[in-house]
Amino acid sequence: MIVRLTSRRLNTGESHTMATTDLDVLLVGGGIMSATLAVLLHRLDPTLHICMVEQLDDVALESSDALNNAGTGHAGYCELNYTPKDKHGDIQIRRALEINAAFEVSLQCWSSLVKDGVLNAADFIQRVPHLSAVWGTENAAFLRKRFESLQAHPLFAEMQWSDQASTLRDWVPLMMAGRQPDANMAATRVAHGSDVNFGALTRQLVAYLKTRPNFTLLTQSRVTKLKQQQHREQSSWQVHIQHLQTGHTQSYQSPFVFLGAGGGALPLLQQSGIPEAHGYGGFPVSGQWLICNNATLINRHQAKVYSQAAVGAPPMSVPHLDTRMIQGKPALLFGPYAGFTTRFLKQGSRFDLAKSVKFKNLKSLLGAGRHNLDLTKYLIKEVFQSHEQRMESLRVFLPEAHNDDWQLAHAGQRVQIIKRCHQHWGKLEFGTEIVASSDGSLAALLGASPGASVSVKAMLDVLQRCFASRMQSKEWQESLQALIPSFGESLIDDAALLARVRRDTLSTLNLG
Image 1 (cartoon, rainbow, N blue to C red):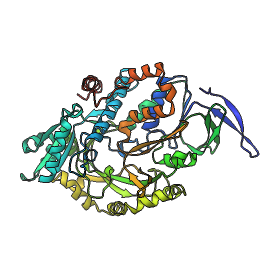
Image 2 (image 1 turned 60 degrees about the vertical axis):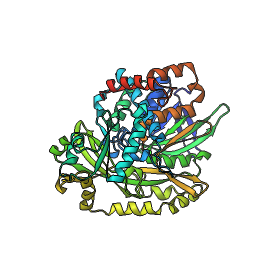
Image 3 (image 1 turned 90 degrees about the vertical axis):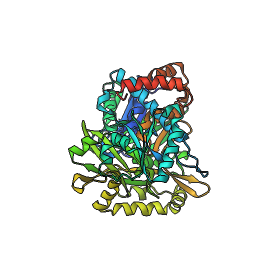
């Protein structure tokens, strides 16, 4: 059932009544996830009345902002944590295949929107080769084995390998400067990797939505109350939104609510009271970058180079030396350096973590905390690093790095998922997860990497779970296949389909 935009009076039980606006879709958070879901729903049904609520002055100022994430089009090309070893020492590539295929879905969607004039590719995505680099005989053997396992699959067929200094100097000349001849360095490379400015992408998507008659953006607005109401035909959500500039609170009624507010999604999910939220908690992790201020160095490096995380480090702190395009200018970043924080958002409250502790997730939190003491110690240690200690980490990548060429900047906040685990009470997970109510009236996105890179696939999963009957309709199926040519098919299993869609996306997005 589609509810038309109307206004009525709600009896709040107090001495006054509050005007209520009826919607079809309410999106909390103005980041890449909410923007992606809004565009998909609008393309599928332009009559839907969609409202996006953002607490800050504009969209994409938290996790989606360019400096608050790695900007890597996470495709499994360079991220070694996506290909772990099993107990027998064999390299597991399934997760890398799944993430790569999911990123290809994003590329297809963005390509279609570029062709339709919704997006300008040059403003949000750039071709930047993806490399994995390691040092030492044992690590080089691991990387070689990983390369052979991945390169045998069509998704990774264009991956290259080398441990020859001459080739590595062509790939990463800045990293090879001053390096000893016997450094025993090895690397893999995928030339069509990308740097994605998810902040710019989000702003383009929202700018397009703002031209549509059935879309409303509320900035400087905060959800203060979220309550489910049961009706004969279906449930709906009563949402109170406070407009921060005026202090005025307005009520909205919507049959579907999406919580895509980054670290702010967990408190709202808990407030919703849906059974599926029980046991979920969050472990906040902060990050910092070293940013290069030497234009000569910036211009000598053209790659995203990932290596191996330190023992006990979270996957989001895997060290990488990144070419970025920020505000239209090339940049060079190294990090991130992880840290401990109690905030769930970069502009959040220091009490966020304490407020998230509930009776229904206490057991999960205690279990996860007990089994991750080493991680907590590692994060606290990271906080107290000196500039010289951070530079020593950078010199593994750049032997000739000088302190004066680099300055520290804060990256974004991430809230890693804590959930129930029968064996250990609770467990800490690094990834992205959708939590949805059984009736499909509410969904929330929790977690971090690969996050934004697989935003289209993640939001398709939301549609499958929350709009199941409409997703089976001929109209929606045809619309999605027009937007995403591989929709309903497997890029992992169909090499011919992969070749067709990749050829198109690389051309359209200027990544070839």
